[in-house]
Structures are given as C-alpha cells and as structure tokens.
Image (tube, rainbow, N blue to C red; front, side, top):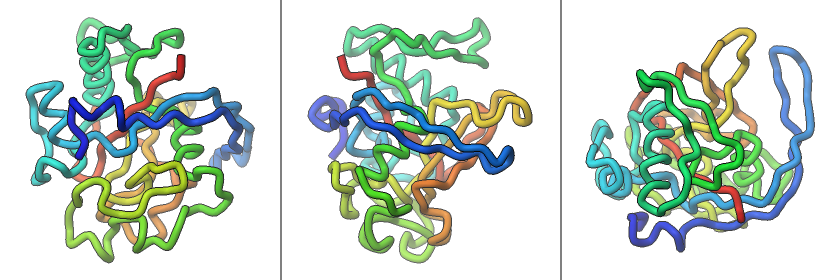
Length: 225
C-alpha cells in the first residue's frame, strides 16, 4: 500500500493553523502557529524503508506493516536518503560520527513532523483526544494480537490519515525537554502494546535519539512550497 512508487500520491497537504501545547513538568502551555505542510497518509512501512535504505530492521513485521525498531537518528537518515532520491535538499545535517543531527530550517526536504504538526494532523480539526472510537481507528493492546498490523487497515481521520493513533509510536522532530533530558526526542501516538489510555492525541513520550524498540516507528513530512 505504501511504497516508493506511490509515495508522492500519499503525501497529504494540510492547511495552516494553530495548536495549544502543554508541558506538564513545568505546568506551562503555549500556542504554536503551524504553516501549511504535507504529511504521509501512513507510517513508513518496512517495504518503503527497505527500498530506500536496503535495510529491514523490523523485529517481526511483514512488508506492509509499519517499520519499527528505528531510532530517531535512523529516521532522520532515512529522510535524507529519500530527499536525495527525489533530488531535494537534505533536511538534516549530521555530525562526523553520525551521532547528532540538526535540522536545516530552510530545506524543503523530507523530515519528521514537529510534535505540533503531528498533533495538528492527528486531530484533523477536532477537539477530542481521539478522532473516533478506538477500535475503529487504532491497533492497541486489546485488539492488536501482540504485534503491529498492516498500515491503513483502520479508519482514517477526517484528513485521510491512517494509524495516527496505535500500531506504532511515531518519532517527531522536537527535543523533549533539554533542561532535564538533554537531546531526548519526542514520540507520539501510542502503539500496539499500549492500553487504550496510551492512544491519545495529547500523549507525549521521549527517549534518547539512539533508542529503538518494536512498537516505535515514524511518519514523514515536508514543508509545502
């Protein structure tokens, strides 16, 4: 369903908007203005990841399952490789040892969504923490059977985006809380191993950019030109 040949037709253009984010540790909230951007209809699949990188890191996932066991750094490297294949500028600049990456703000290459973009895309204009009844929209602990499922087999949100909740957590661009966690990055959305309460548009988790586990993948985005 999601492969290299179908990638461009599965990038969904979203409008500008704004979103209220909250930091529970600091007890603060702030409004983020969001520029128009495009985001993939599905999480990156094992098929697409292998086509672009030649690697298949997923633990047990079949070809049309979301790729998993991917670190933030590996997701950023994938974005750069994809950008090269489409002849657009890389979005990430890596250190010589490959253990750090910074974003090039002016690049329109493929990238991870910011967490504000991710939540904005997930909500699709709704105010609720889910865009439908959980069994209709998400693979989670109570219905997943103990692993990921093929992308696009649950109902999409109002903007046509599948698996925004459940199946696998998704890395975002942002550093979580540099004052406390250093370079830890954000991931969103809940996964196949989470209970219902873990699959909410507002849930935030974080880990080191080298962290990888079997219910964590990613989705790609691009700035709209």
